[in-house]
Amino acid sequence: MTEVSAGVLHTLFHSDQGGHEQVVLCQDRASGLKAVIAIHSTALGPALGGTRFYPYATEEEAVADALNLARGMSYKNAMAGLDHGGGKAVIIGDPDTVKSEELLLAYGRFVASLGGRYVTACDVGTYVADMDVVARECRWTTGRSPENGGAGDSSVLTAFGVYQGMRASAQHLWGDPSLAGRKVGIAGVGKVGHHLVTHLREEGAEVVITDVREQAVGRILAAHPTGVTAVADTATLIRAEGLDIYAPCALGGALNDDTVPALTAKIVCGAANNQLEHPGVEKDLADRGILYAPDYVVNAGGVIQVADELHGFDFDRCKAKAAKIYDTTLAIFARAKADGIPPAAAADRIAEQRMHEAAVARRAR
Image (cartoon, rainbow, N blue to C red):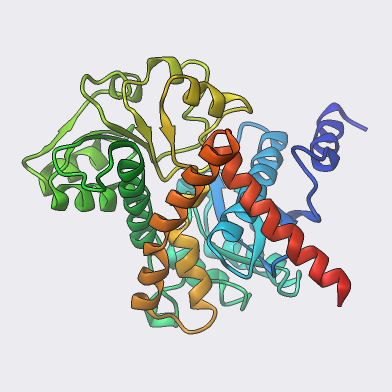
């Protein structure tokens, strides 16, 4: 057994990091597809989660990401009140150079082979048009275009949910949900971040942005000629004077041993998945008096949308569900205060309780 495979198996079967029901390694030589599908839990129903297309440095890194993301989806779906467990898929490679129709069709066949245990959707590196291709081979595909019976871009409601999480955080910390006059820093203004900027500016917040892609920054500044400024990088953003809220909206691990001590914001609430780089960061935030809105709670608007697509999509119904993220976030803060624990731990307890009760009920049937 190689060192890589031993590490993967240890992660898979270690209860804290793994505990997954199923992990599928997929390869199609003709198209060049190399993918990992991870199903963490089906206690609440079929696993639901997006497909990430990313140039991982190693296969082990790809597997580890799939496992972490799938586990996060179990908690996210539970907290969103959905009848879905957690799953995630990653496709290894640079989507700008290796993505093809043949590869996406091959991926669709692998998802279809799971017989509905896993329902896929968009994520980093995949888009509505890609899901339309995948759906030609797999009926367990969401995030499709309206022309093909889908709901379209799920980033619209993802941003709306994060915005509701910010309002709840402001209510909890400052006694007023209004963000007017607040200074909000957003790291990553891509699919979700640019919608979030619009919500904030409509309410009168001051926004500071950064993104590794100059084109993304330019698009925001052109759309919002006033009230939005840009800084060079995330390191500059998190140290910005007078920052009230920091919103990580790019890749995970944004909150770590280097960034937490440097944060000037009093609230962290963003769209990125897996923001806490390692266990213990949530306590570091609490010790500094920084209120953390758990990422998988506030960014659940997108999964609410794609789940609804399975039953005949209705935008107004989905937006109403996503608006409840405000109440859910407040409930987590209340539970955290009552139990004397950080909000991230409180959210985990609530999600784990729902999954446990569902598993017990299933065994009793």
